[in-house]
Image 1 (cartoon, rainbow, N blue to C red):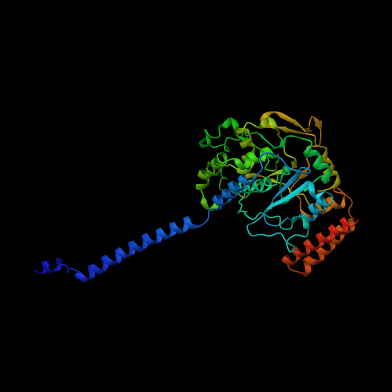
Image 2: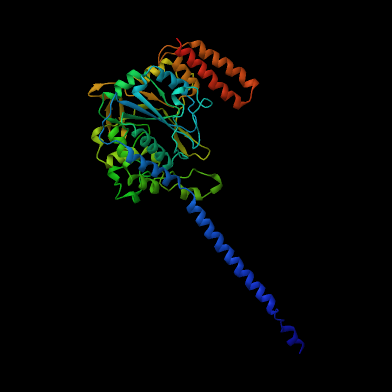
Length: 421
């Protein structure tokens, strides 16, 4: 009897079981409801790629395809900027010596960033930002979508016949007149394009839409004729393949341990280094190209703490942007491509010319030196000395954000001194 009582368990009251059951049902219902609401919210949020693609599609409908326009042909300068244009004082001097009928300016900056009197001291850039800009990540397909947005906006002006893509650290190496004649005298686009020998860049899943034999690599900084710019914004196939399969490999992370080995086996594809040359190769337009860039860059191999070597563009500062160095860049008349054993001699219409019209990456000090050395015309060198003295004093007296504002002020004052002479 005692053992029987020990084994007997008292059943919970019916009311208690009912409450527990209802609680579970309520919990499941709330979880499902929250999931549905999250999905609805996700779908209701605007997709930046879909929105930007709609902008490009709309631009296509407004573009004149018959290439009929009045007046002189223009160069469209397309600036791909992180936020502001730190070298606007130099570009302002560059455009001062040009006929406004011969060029136009477009800027892709951070969404919502406006070029007004408080953000730029050159009137050439006022209000020139795209209204439909997107957030851009380095090594992501958003970079090439931003480029496409710039081309789409510029193509709406039928007078734009040459399109130059520039970063916010690019500088011109010649005056406007020389660059204008150089570009307009050639019927070809200038697109760096060569065979990519690194197997890790090409993803076999891209085939058959992008076969390996059409896979190309090259500098992001291109100059194209109008017809090729139209090819870039008309594309809906190659861009989608890049979105899906051309992605930057995650960087090494010491916290992930052995997982790094697996991550480093992924394809390391940088979209902006492959998209345009591959697209034009797929379109069988390589015979219409000068297969070289017009923008000079020095690359330096560096290694991080985990011994992962990578290439980065060297930044020119005041010290190494000497007249001797600029002269050396201007003297370059050919480029050698190791993967193709090809020497590209720099010509326009079979006439030998310097290879480079622009260079990057330049600091503000380096850009000021270009002005003081008269690369773009006459300049009062005392403006540079004054700027250096003021900024040196400012470092000890005022906060960093005030120094940045002061740089803009001094740069503007320097430009005034230059243009008033």
